[in-house]
Image (cartoon, rainbow, N blue to C red; front, side, top):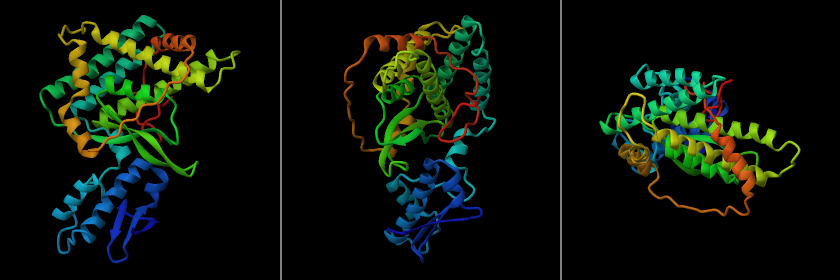
Length: 336
C-alpha cells in the first residue's frame, strides 16, 4: 500500500514517486471531475508502481514494456497521463470526424422531435434512431476503426431500485453499448456500493448516458403528475418506472421494424444482433472484465395497473434535443 496524496499539479493529473512510495493525484482532478475520471488516472499510476516494485523495471523508459505489461494486468489505460484528455472530456469531445458529423445530423432531427405536432415529433425521433443504428451497423460491418471507453451513469448507491436493471437492458438493446455494475464508494453513506458503467465508443456512451438521464427525468416528472392525489409509495413508483421503460423499449422496437426511409433492407433482427455483438466491443469489454458474476433480484409484489399506466406513458416518450451537447457532472446531464 503506497502513501496517497492530493496536491496542486501543473501539467499532470497524477504521479507515482518510487522514492517516497507515494501516488499523488491532482486536486483539480479529484475536486472538479467525476470519480471515474480520477479512477482511470489512479489505475495508471498504480501500473507505474507495479512496474517499479513488482517487475523492478529500473532503467526502462517510464512507459516501457514492464509498464505496459502492468497496465494489462491492472486493466489500466497506458495513455492516461500528461496532457491526455480526461475521460469526461473524451466522452464529450468533438473531433470533426464522420462520427461527429453524424451526431450533428442526429441533433437536427431530435430538435424536430421537440415539435408540438405529435406525428412530426415521432417521425423525427424514429429517423434519428434509424440513422444511429445504420451508422453503427455499417461501422461494424466494415470493421472500421473505433475507440472504446467506459464511464459511469448515475450515482453510486448501496442499493439500486429495480428499474435500473430494466434501464440497463434498454440501453444495451438499442444503443450499441455494454452495461455492467461495478463497485464504487458511496460518500454520503460511508460504504461500498455499486454504480452503472457504460462501455462503447465515445459517441455511443454519450448517447446512452443522455438517454439514461432523459428517461429518469421523464419518469420523475410523469410520476409527480400521476401520483398527485394517490399518495403511492416508492414501490409503486418502481412499478411505474419499469412500465415507462418497457413502454419506451416497445416503441423503439416497433420503430426499428419499419422500413427505413431510404429503402435500405435492414430488418430488426440484424440490428439487434449488431447492437449486442460488435466483436471489437466484446473483446474490449471482456478484456476489461474477464470475470463477471451475475445476480438476479426478486421483483416482489407488482401493481399491474400502475405498471400498465407506466407503459402507456413510456409509449408517448419522445427524446429530443441536447443529445450531442456536453453535460455537467456524472456522465451526461441533459441541458435545458
